[in-house]
Every structure is written in structure tokens, then in C-alpha cells.
Length: 255
Image 1 (cartoon, rainbow, N blue to C red):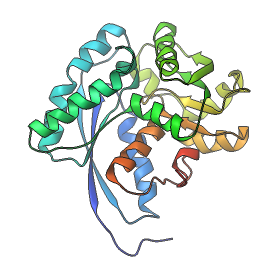
Image 2 (image 1 turned 45 degrees about the horizontal axis):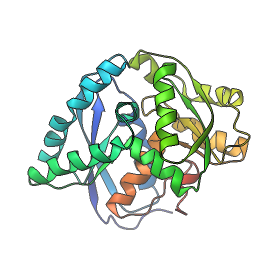
Image 3 (image 1 turned 30 degrees about the vertical axis):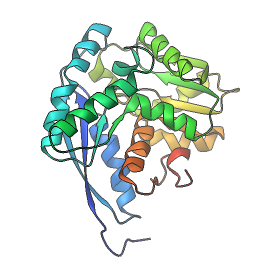
Image 4 (image 1 turned 60 degrees about the vertical axis):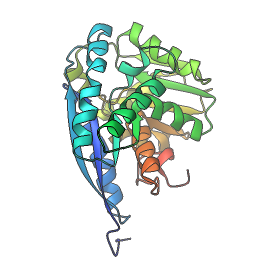
């Protein structure tokens, strides 16, 4: 199907850790794939927060800088704003994604350019609920203590984590340089037998898009990532069809 007309161009803003190289790759890749079959178009705009090592101290310092980024992106009058770091939100305490979203949204209002705010942390939790997941198994690149905080955050949202793998990579650039298809082997080390959904990458920096549909087709159950969930939530906030071809169950257009 080739779209016969262009309905609208949306400005997509992202608040990105300074060492993140994946969200500005995977989010545009999904939305460009969508452009081949749907009429809407997208432009992409980012503001960066300093962070190189995935430690609690650097994550908290980085998160404190997110307000400035929201001001900068609302200067561009973006239509939706995504906070592209899951672990920075989840290590700040239960329910913090709601606090962050409300605060950053208020900044866009105060700046005269109100825009809905999506956090990758909130998007993942909401995406799992959309899929009806009560039990999940996940893979994360973080050191084990940070991974355990992510697991507890998800459990605190009422979703059981049946198993998880922590790859224990502290350097954020190293995480972003990983081959996404390596996850096809790693998922076989994950006990997902009781899980309703597999989270192939609980991190928006660890590339996974190329593997999502392949792994889902192979293991026969829904597979998502933090980036896929963020894209779903962005499309929902924009009020347009939540569909991206070959990006797993959540973006197949039925939800």
C-alpha cells in the first residue's frame, strides 16, 4: 500500500542521554517504516543530557537535567516529547515515571508550547498492560543492582517478572554498539516458559529492533522492547494508528 496523500507532519522530540545513539536510530526507523504504509510524516528533534557511565550517580545527575531539555524541545513546538532513558526513571523510585511526565509536561505548558510527554519507563509498563501481560521475562544490559531495580519497578506496577538476564555492561556506548541479533541467542538463555511477554531489551540504548519480529516469530509469543513501547505510546499521544510493520505484537495495528 502506498499512501495517496500526506495528512500531517508531526515533530517528534526526544530527551536523550548524551551517550545514547540508539533512540535516534530505532524510533526514526520505526516511524519511517510506518510512512511507507500510512499517510503521516515525522521530523525528529533531540536535546541531550550528560551521561556516559550507567551508574546511579550519573543517572540521577542526568535526570536532573531533563527539565532544561524539555524547555529546549518545546521551543521547537514539538507535537510529542519522549524521555529516552528507562533506567534513569526506574531507579528514582516507584511510580516516578508519572512524576517525571507531569513535571516535563508542565514545563512545555509554561513555555507556551504544550506537548504530551512519554517516558520509556512508563511506556514499557503501559505497553505490557495493553498486551494483557501479567508475567514477563526480560533482558537488560545494566549491572545487576540496576537491573534488579528495574525488575522491582515493574513488579511494583503489578506485573510479575518471572526471569531476567543482566548483561552487566556499564559503558553506555558499548551498550549502543551491540549487535541486535545477538539477542536471538541470549533469549534462549532466558526462562520465558511462564511469561506472557518477552521484553527483549528493557533499555532504549541496547539495539533490538532488527530482532523483535524474528524472535517473536521463533518463540511464538509477544516480544517487545522499551523502544517499541515508546513508539506505541508516542503514536497513541499523537492520536494516530499505532502500527509499524515488522515491529512485534504491540505495533501490529490491533491495539
